[in-house]
Image (cartoon, rainbow, N blue to C red; front, top):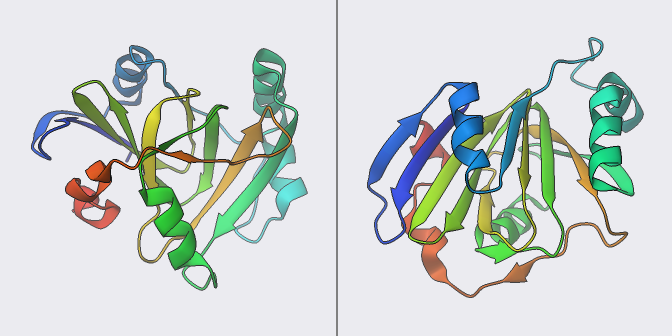
Length: 183
């Protein structure tokens, strides 16, 4: 189940927990983050490839592409057997920003986004069916866990795709990893 936990940025103590998708969306909208649930347009298997996955969500993808001017869409899948899982996790876990939106739709699995706004940190557990769009220049990090197992649709407005601008702030280390967040 999707969850939102709100922390004070100076401590990992939770000040608020939200588990209703509509309430999560409303809270995150207040900081410029889009969160919504998407229904699948058709049934797809776990081994579905990029074209089949995008086709299943074509109407939602097309709507976002038109709304934000996204130029490309792809699918990323990371499993516990992925040869670069540790390297990728380390890249995503450091607080960073992007000059573009970071848009992810979870087709399968789950991941944990942390968004750092002022003196608050918003921990958003995204699961299959969740779309999250972190705005450009928002400080955030992502934890896919030690045994990642997810498939996401990604949308980009720039041809470079995912480019991180690291803040150098060690804040991410002070907050629960996905395993502890979900426990």
